[in-house]
Image (cartoon, rainbow, N blue to C red; front, side, top):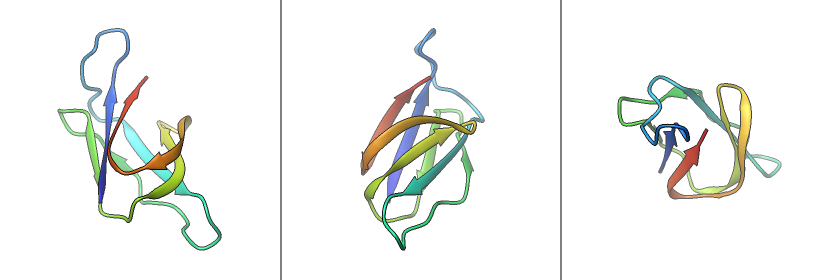
Length: 74
C-alpha cells in the first residue's frame, strides 16, 4: 500500500481532483485503476510497492521506486 500526493508547484498547495494512475514495471504487474486525489492532494493505492511510472492527468511525472508516500510536484 502506498500514497501519491500531488502538489501544485506554483502555489505549494495540494492538487484536488487530479487523476493519478500507475503502470508498474515488470511483465506481470500491469497497472492500477485511476484514482482521483482528495482535498489533501492524496491518492491512496492498495497495491504492493515496486518500480513503476506515475501519471497525473495522463502525463508522465515520475519513473522509479514507488513505496510509502511519494510527493509529486506538478
